[in-house]
Image 1 (tube, helix red, strand yellow):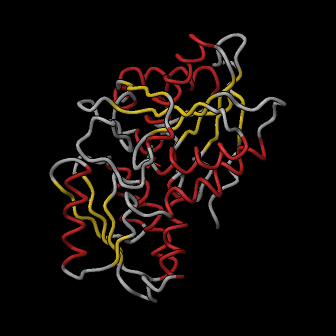
Image 2 (cartoon, protein in one colour; image 1 turned 90 degrees about the vertical axis):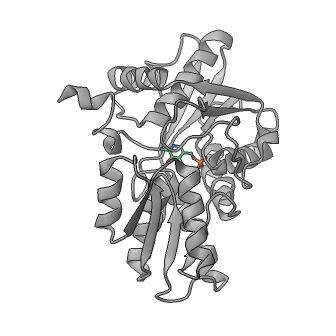
Length: 289
Ligand SMILES: Cc1ncc(COP(=O)(O)O)c(C=O)c1O
């Protein structure tokens, strides 16, 4: 099953009065996240370009969702898969990766340490790495997929004034912005980031020493740093008001979007990367017992 064609739904109860907020529900992808899109593009490009041959091994460094998307494709097409990921990744992610048949190397440290371990394996000739941080297929999946779908499905006569995306590898932010600007040249692009000392799974900050080569931050007009408590509060509020069980980075995105709309008004689209299932073993849900 090909990723994409996820629903664009209005958040009527959550949006501040006089504003319109539409969310693209990216958990409606084959393994439940926006990263199925980049995984598919990078994998297909690698096969087309002869970088992956039948049965050849694959390596990836990821905090989870790209690894899960690639592990699914590796399983379907018979490639042994090794994933380097931070040892504090949630149990659900590790289980899902193992369920898809991937071998895990748990790295002490954050995503940047996982990248270094994976790069060393590639240098040692252990396999091919799509390397989502530098692979043009990552933003292309959004320029030619996500953005095209938003333009096709946008229900209002006037174009959206704002787009809110998480900044992780920069793939979503860069590709979606490029695609949306073709039809909406004036759209404001909001980069939603973690505080550099308060990590949120899948996200990064422009203050991080490592900035992915794939990210074109010149497209960004507005920047929001969101704390974990604010992200969790938005997760809770979204569940209460709309019934959507969103993940933590989606909570951060909606916190930023709701704060901005409430201060400035307007119409917006928010890209929600995944649902809450993979976070049940962590806060805020773990306290429910
Ligand atoms: C849950 C989650 N949110 C946000 C992102 C950021 O998306 P991107 O890598 O396209 O910047 C990711 C990326 O892995 C993610 O897994």
